[in-house]
Image (cartoon, rainbow, N blue to C red; front, top):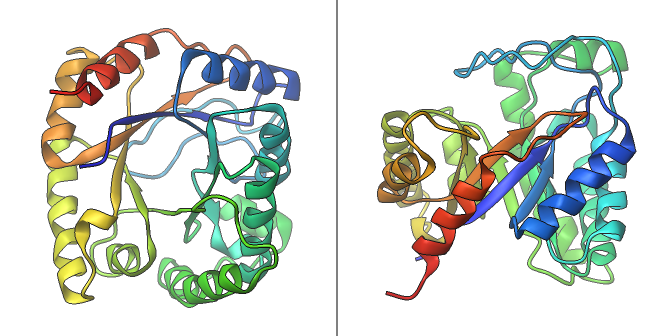
Length: 273
């Protein structure tokens, strides 16, 4: 069984690069396993998802994800790096494969290629991408995944690390089927009950596409300071099979309070029995 890993998402909004660099340094010093950033072009006011969380003003400072990851890769030494998640629509899939491979080399093998179908209408319209529909964006993601996998296999030089593919989303009819076919990591959001249901659906898709479900690491977004304590919440997800836990960090302060609880819980779970 995979070991527990703790991740943070360093949101590239309402801050300066120096603020994010300090957050990355702190994450690495604390022993956090993975640092993600998101792939948007403007600050997010409210995410229209099951979380419905308020992120802050919709105007203000914001930075592009992949150039930021390249800087993170050069700056850091140990922590894994990725996007949570890249919007497939924003980049040619074969170019994206090359970008991820290049960052894998800059980081000496620490890159994660996180991808999803995309959803934020403002990003699409202001940057001139066709927004389409949720269905068309999922079809585009489905078509892109074999191109990404093939291009990675053809690149010279090859990735140094394993360059795992993370796919985000929880759609039961299409997204989880794409996860079953192509993902090394599946990331979602929701309560333990929701996670358990989606997890079972993913296992069913793995059976249908002849994929070993144990090959896919399960990840979930969690609160920095859960009301019932990190261990209690973590144990609920852990019992389902979730092994990666992501905590969002907001700038410019990027407050890490509460993450020590998750790290201590991780270490207890990963200790030899």
